[in-house]
Length: 97
Image (cartoon, rainbow, N blue to C red; front, side):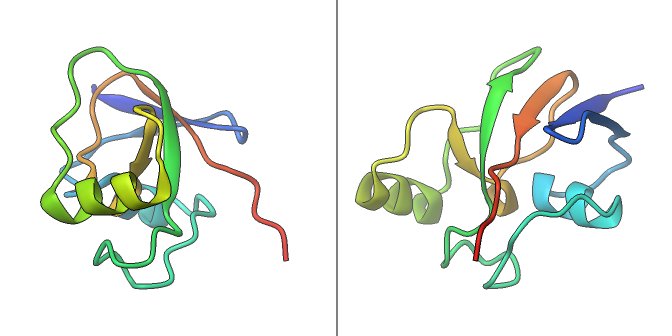
């Protein structure tokens, strides 16, 4: 059974065919900002992948352009552009108004 651990809530969620990390989070009521609805144009769904069992998919062209523009670290990814991977540990940033 493939799972993703979301921090800081410390919730382990089973992957059940969700096409993106954002979809997995939303389906399981993990608070993850997503102003553009998952199109990769806003960057609000960025997360930090702190651990994974295997390699992550390469960044899409949309994500790569945003990562370059905003200076993302290699661990910082857009949840809407990232497939969930078994044993992935993801830190969701705190959102403040």
